[in-house]
Length: 207
Ligand code: ADP
Ligand code: MG
Image (cartoon, rainbow, N blue to C red):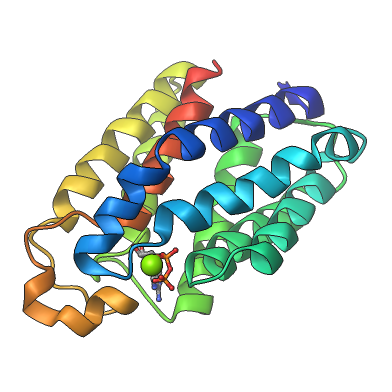
């Protein structure tokens, strides 16, 4: 079981890794977008970091909803509203719980991903964050159904997300700014798929 304290710790780990990878993510976005993805993610999670103390007082559902609202309001670009929606939907799914298990996490991620699809009018194969999120969720659900432990489930998710990032390289972007490049987006990994994988790795590391 994962309690509020641990969720906040993971959010702080995410803030740290996104700050450390600010340049990397921005460089990726420079190639197929407008070079702000790292700045956007680091800025959003720096705000989350500032709220850490008050977040820990909230149940996990409200905590994630608050994180989502912060990302929507503090992050420019498409990634703020998209990740923000994912966190808000995840929070609504979890509700007023002070502890969650793997089944809760997978339900929340699933509804979060549906939120990204709805908000972004997007699906897999379009060279976006969804190309890491969806395979990661599928792999984790499969492991969970097979009775794997938390660590194994999360590791399978990370591997699938990493493969998903690789799979974005040959894709032609059809959503977001990268779509303006059309065929010229081919050969480059998607920044949003990369940031999701970094965040999922932080969750996996915590177990
Ligand atoms: P912007 O594109 O507005 O500059 P960011 O650079 O922060 O915002 O985020 C870009 C990332 O957002 C992309 O790499 C992609 O993964 C994701 N993205 C953009 N549009 C969509 C969409 N419609 N659906 C899902 N993900 C998207
Ligand atoms: Mg950008």
